[in-house]
Image (cartoon, rainbow, N blue to C red):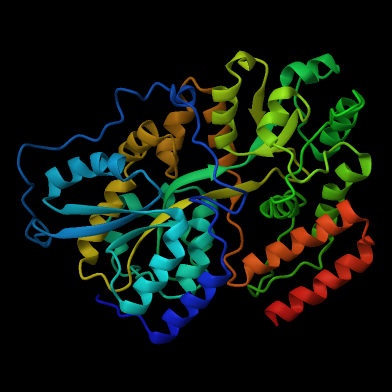
Length: 448
């Protein structure tokens, strides 16, 4: 099971890392954001979510299981939550005798550490993987294919995770290389007080409705708008394609933008600009715009909730979240982080024991309680959904209909090209049809 990296894999990873923008632990949707507020964690799970050791002593292995006690695993966690993670896995060590040596990798150093680890073969046993970097890991063969072992770990069964992060979605080549750990998604934030003043008692649920409501809100005039589109948000137009009922990957796995659904998404995106209902200054602050009411609707993630509650607690009760408006569907982005066994780990069985522990619903809830990162396991999401937080319930609903960005190795470059094209039309007046023709040619050149 000791799978050594190939030199070609190392070269691919190194090249890909140079091209990949590492924007955080979850997605490509913008700069690092503050964690959600403590209030967002106020569910009924407080006293029941801490994993407990199953006994006073290290568990004895059964006759058909290897004795893993005494093994020391290295775990790379991205960001600054290493202390919380050490507390999380303490019961795992008590139960199994497997020690976990946690190393925090600052997000800004991830590319360098990965490149060095692949080239030298000196990586961890288990690593966190931001989903935006998963294509890079797969292209570089940095993760072990554990498809022949996973049946022994019940928490890692595909049925335990939302369909958007099924193994088929995560591993287009048919391997099993990583498992969902924490999740994130995008929902519609709206100022209920501002909508009510304009005569709307409920947030928009469809594309037609959001254009209507945004136009009505923009009639307030001055610097007050109806909606906000971040000019840096590359995943947003792709979620519009999904909502139009289409995809940007064809049946052969190739990137295909020349579809009616892609053009519908383009027109939906541009219509907000054509209506004049969105701010066009690139430095517009989405949190401040929402708090002041200048942009009373936008699609964003749970991190925005934290900013609102921290900066404007007086708005409690004057805003809400709901699932994104539907075209023919209301699919949103599935972001977050996975965990996987490093390709040349000498302890794959112990590594999978740890990942199996991390996928336990009670462990997932304990991690949410500790650092406010949403679970990626359906059982844990269902328990949060049954709690008393309306916003968390909406996040759980949206995650049930969310998708990953394409895992195509050229996707980062293609996604940026799409965003640049849309901005050129919306902000600088480029001709729509000419710009799209140029985009299609550029994508063919990148991927052909």
